[in-house]
Image 1 (spheres, rainbow, N blue to C red):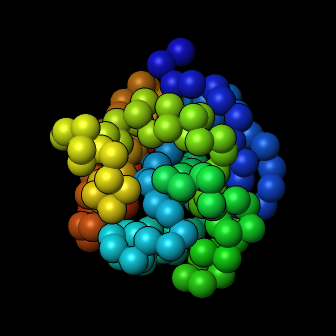
Image 2 (cartoon, rainbow, N blue to C red):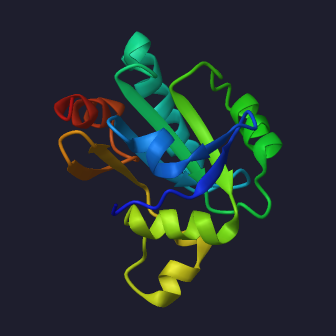
Length: 162
């Protein structure tokens, strides 16, 4: 019951429950992003696309990737689909982009540990972390890995939790 079960919306407009639908019993990765980010988001996205390719058929079956917007007041499902099209991210299953009510997204961000060192840093959207939260709910094993590191390191971290 550590993770909230708030309702979020996927890039394709589906309503999902954070814990019940996205985490329960799964190996998952989460990153935070927003559609107009010109800082670390494009680099994170490029690394995650390589992870997506390397996982192949395991993605969406054994391992699930999630990207959550930091700006849900602007990034609705259509904006997230546009982001995916802009970066040529295949919209096949396994990598889901998420938005929701601002308070719900903020609660999820904090529970996943995506918080700054100080209140000032935490409040500055341009200072968002370049990390991935990776976990296996069945084993209750959770870690973080740099999204700006090599895609091989991200892949290794995910596979070590399966």
